[in-house]
Image 1 (cartoon, rainbow, N blue to C red):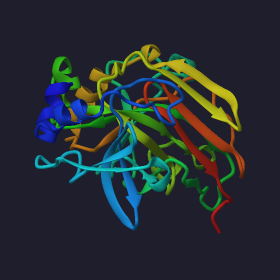
Image 2: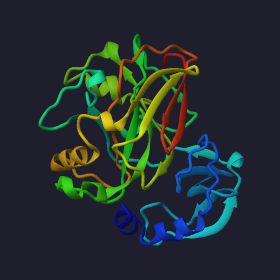
Image 3: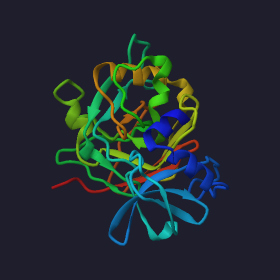
Image 4: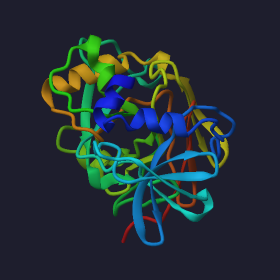
Length: 285
């Protein structure tokens, strides 16, 4: 993990790690993960940074720019707007990766694509498209790639990971799930809530996951229940598709999902990451 971070960030990881201790786990409900990266807007400007004592510590560039350094400027968390933590070139979803969600053991994980334009940030509004009749949540742990990965072996796959974040694989089930339907059903605008933080160093295959709707728990599980491991997922996807730094993989959802309605507040909580919250808006006209 650390080697991938150093490769992707040109040594920034070590500098940030040293600068961010001790960490104040703001807005993450008491967990004590050592590092939380994000993208933010302040005074009309977008920047990358990390959450630590005092607020958001600004970086001079992006996570994957080798010349990025810590600027020394710290902005209170309440003064920034949290953006999606990355702008991925690819958004991959893993289908049926939990037995509790109808999954079965297969030689390779099944996967599909969402669109980069479907990505929205923490606190952004989910907007059901025209014709939406059966909109569902799917809380998931999301892998964020930190290095270019093409045909990587499973044994080395996790070395290409930057960290993990929380995601919600919003799905309009009335659109169908066939080959010509899945992109519309899963890749429509606002259908990929993501964030708020990317956290490196977590054990991806052993993280608690919970989804709440209006404060009521509707999904609960752990990534140790996944049919295909994170390493298997990365190795398989990279066998067919080159993954770039910042690309994301939604690793699947546990349990049974239910329809959402306008005004519903959906929270996805990932152990060590925190809470991703989005509200469902009215159907687009």
